[in-house]
Length: 268
Figure 1 (tube, rainbow, N blue to C red):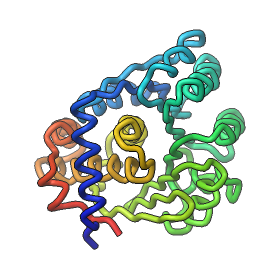
Figure 2: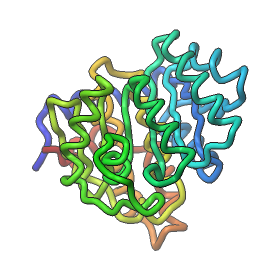
Figure 3: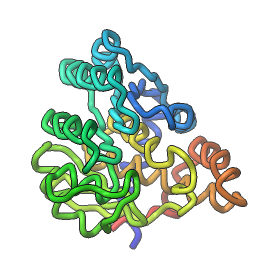
């Protein structure tokens, strides 16, 4: 189902704002995806900053345009920096994204994710099993792999959005986004996104960039996912496999435009 004109317009407007203003995105993310995340932000028009040192993370979050906290490889230093950065984001009214990577049965990141959840992230992004675990309705998946369907996560996503007073984005073949009241499904993308390192984690950083470009948090998140997944489709058409896709995807993030969004966006 094609999206309505208002969603197309808000997505195009947000993309233009990101490219005009180059929002500074503060990333505390996992060591596996740092380079790809920085390159994805640069490609879409934002400015990355990987500040994950205690004593720097808090002050930096107050001046950043957006903050990503990703729990992929939560070292002791990063864990302290995450709490400090969240406090800085609150002080500076900086929107922030929580990506509760692989939570559930793992004993360090799971309680940290719950603590951060209770500090009201602007957006929570994860796969279905991560969202269910963060809501307290399940035990999580197999590491970064979801064992639950996106639709099965809808009750958990609604509950989590109400708890955080924010937006919850459940990633899958069809992405599901909700602010607790409105529910949006996005059907763009390509399976090759799951075959490259950082395909999901970098999306959280792009969401943080788009949150700086639109006052409606759900519309901003829809815009980020739409731009990201439409770029994936464009890249897949030029790729022979995961290796060439990774390069083509960065190119597509840089070149995706209003015509691509109008022609391809599939939102219901």
